[in-house]
Amino acid sequence: MSGAPRRQYTNPVIRWIEYRLPIFSTVEATIGADMPTPKNLNYWWSFGGLLTLALVIQIVTGIVLAMHYIAHGSMAFDSVEHIMRNVNSGWLIRYVHANGASLFFLAVYVHIARGMYYGSYKYPREILWMLGVVIFLIMMATAFMGYVLPWGQMSFWAATVITNLFSAIPVIGEEITTWLWGGFSVDSPTLTRFYSLHYLLPFAIFGVTILHIWALHVHGPNNPTGIDVKGPQDTIPYKPYYTSKYLSVFSAFMMVLAVLVFFEPNYLGHPDNYKPADPLQTPAHIVPEWYFLPFYAILRAIPDKLLGVIAMFGSILVWFILPWLDTSRVRSGRYRPLFKQFFWLLVIDFLVLMWCGAQPAEGPALIVARIATAYYFLHFIVILPLVGWFERPKPLPESISTSVLGSGAAAPKAAE
Ligand code: HEM
Image (cartoon, rainbow, N blue to C red; front, side, top):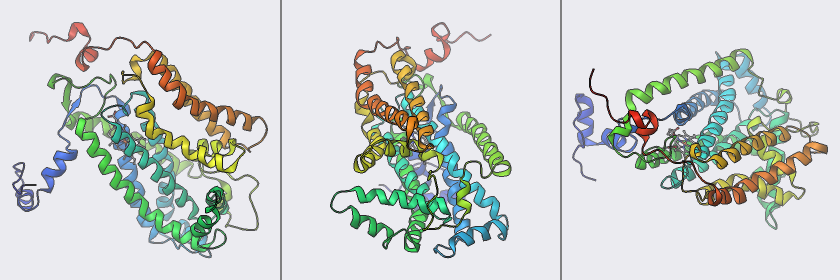
């Protein structure tokens, strides 16, 4: 890389730094805010920015919590109570962190669904999509380990159920589980390693997010038509048009977070987690946080433990090959009448699985979970490839501009 500055800056301090370390121009060139952006991005394209904000909120509140939290089996629960009662604004920081995690997942589900609907995973954005799947997997690991830290009943038993899954691996399963636990059951050593990883992984998410945004900027974002940008007439500057759109979405997010934190801070939590962990008393009904429920339902829908674990991980890993499972050459669901219906069926299926995950794994709920699990895999492995082959897409507009302005309005009017 040449040492010459790529751009002249007016600010003398920035110019001084840039001459010695061209960091500003490099960042701008890679994830620059002045890139021409398709002019038709709707509000669903604000969720990536929102996720970045959510990640920063989690890291900042998490670092403050870590100043007061004690990762030891005999003190963790009390240290959280200490945060809630004695630390200045400790309750606020903890509630923002806990509810922030929920909203982070809500936003990521919307972000993923947007990508699926508009075919954002298709050529040439496959790596961008796959990096997203990696982020999602790390997010799940981070949230799971974070939930264990308060060392309440649900923390302890969730850790026990999930770590036990590894014992289903043939031959080495038991060894791996003992190694994960750092002993012969979930105990203080398990807590300390989860704490260490819970602190580390958000930075891994941050790192992969940089790659994610870098990949985004190589070909630019997709857009609701799925048609490539054909020239400057199809774009507007990112700043201030989309930055201002972001601001309204950020405000809405902060308002929802505030309502949760100030009015219903424990609505999304489980009351059993306000009881200290007790290895001798299994709760009647062990349930994970709401955002894990669909995957938990898939795990329990399958009678065999190993197959259940494979199905649960498989339900996310299948996203990696989504760009190749979808055989349609049309990107956006807007022009794919059949795909659109199956997309919404998948959303309903996911919500049904979420409901099933919250029920005891027996009776009608178990049967529904089995059907919904089968449909989930059917969608990706059978329906998507077939729909791509057999569907007759609607005619595509000529360009982004004609889709925005209509064919009659494509030619600019004479000045009035
Ligand atoms: C911490 C989590 C994440 C952050 C901070 C993040 C950030 C972003 C940002 C800033 C954008 C551009 C704005 C937008 O299109 O909304 C974006 C686009 C995208 N993201 Fe993510 N993302 C995250 C997770 C994910 C996940 C889990 C997936 C998929 C499994 C994913 C898939 C995509 C795709 C396909 C695009 C391109 C969208 C398009 O141009 O149509 N992202 N992401």
